[in-house]
Image 1: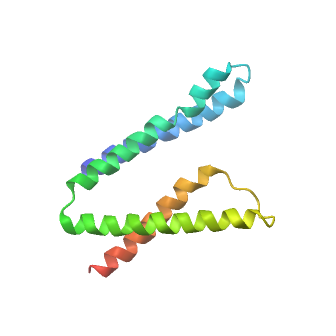
Image 2: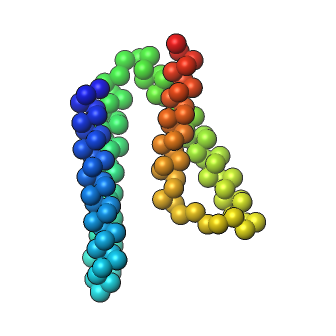
Length: 124
């Protein structure tokens, strides 16, 4: 797990630096060309991809039981995130405030954590 925490933590730190730097640059330099603004805006995607890579690498290291727990947690996260975002989309039709797509990944992450708690409890 130590290796995973280092890989994931490093990718998360890079993501935070890229995110705050890109937001700062986009706010301060409005005269950048469209291509440059697009590249700066997408800068956090690379470290986010590194986070995904760290997660997949960790999944490959797991034994069958832990892999099953993760599989169940991810299945729960997928279904619950779809249900929550789908439902909120309908609520926007009746005046609820619009929420940007930026919230989808945090919702998925929270549902994954909840799914892990449920799956781990099941296999105790």
